[in-house]
Length: 455
Image 1 (tube, rainbow, N blue to C red):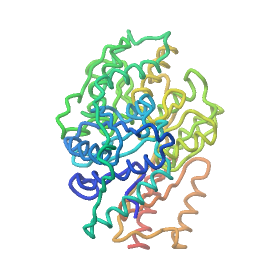
Image 2 (image 1 turned 30 degrees about the vertical axis):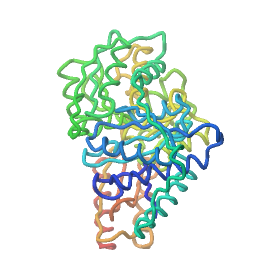
Image 3 (image 1 turned 180 degrees about the horizontal axis):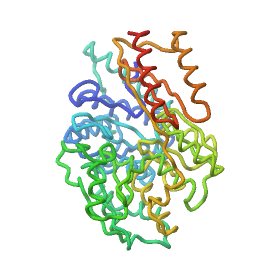
């Protein structure tokens, strides 16, 4: 079995695989894999570990640290920092891997672990599979009461040290992505920190660049992360922007790699809108943009009008990254707000993406609402069909015929997406159309047909 999902290992804390004993083993076997792949035997492998603000992060941090040390790996502790900060500091410290303790936009009772390779990118499939194989073996050994973590030489145990200037290093990195000829002196910016990993650094970055910053949801208590706030719940940000008559609002998610924005009129600008602005009006017009299967067709049409290529990757920023590298492009992302600006950072970074939008506003002398004028979101309807057990709808000719008919009807002005959930017995039906009524009717009709055929 594979313990890894599309974004590392994630689940409810206290239930496998997010238990202290499992995490201890994860740290240990990951350390062994790093040692096996160490090209410099004279240098002990090292990792950096950062986390978001969940209370369970303290327990997971300690278990991971012990596992790495037992394998003979040194650990640099960064404390609460956004996921992209860990990616950056992994490279900065010349570490062999970076580890993030976070469940991103999930509620506080979930947690997870995701890894970066030494170059600050998501872990390769080869290394991830090697870790998973050792995990599978050690979990089987635990059932037989075998020795789980043999220590060959106590003199080779790893050490720990806490990096006290980690926040400052990352803040300077973010500020360095903002064009030197501009500042934010004339902008009022509301920053919704989601009570998460960016609660301290995000407002500081904006303030140090000159903005009048109003920070909200920036007092984490370990359990209020993502609680009716942040990028998944932007209502409080929209309200705050209007109340303070701010120029713009920025919302992060719990681990700081996802962003949505709000213009001066309180209107939401999601990841698609951010990509449109950066692609068409950024410092350099984009050659091409990588979206995902979930990107609104309105983005595709708007980029076509601007003579910018557009391709769709599978859902997940690692797949967006793969397509960007294959095409030699630098800009891509998801509607949910994972935005990759590869000329600035090697991973999705909410703060850096937000700064690039603010730079465009300053360079053009325009409000965010003006910058998004050429982008029209097509009406979209998403219907989830829950099944008693997962079945593939494409194995049924009756359903395939219905899907083909719908696609023919929408051709050139809309889109149909049928997806199987990767975590539960559910089929997701998404219809986009230039006709809102057609969009709603078609999505519900197809959902009803799936229910009838699959049960």
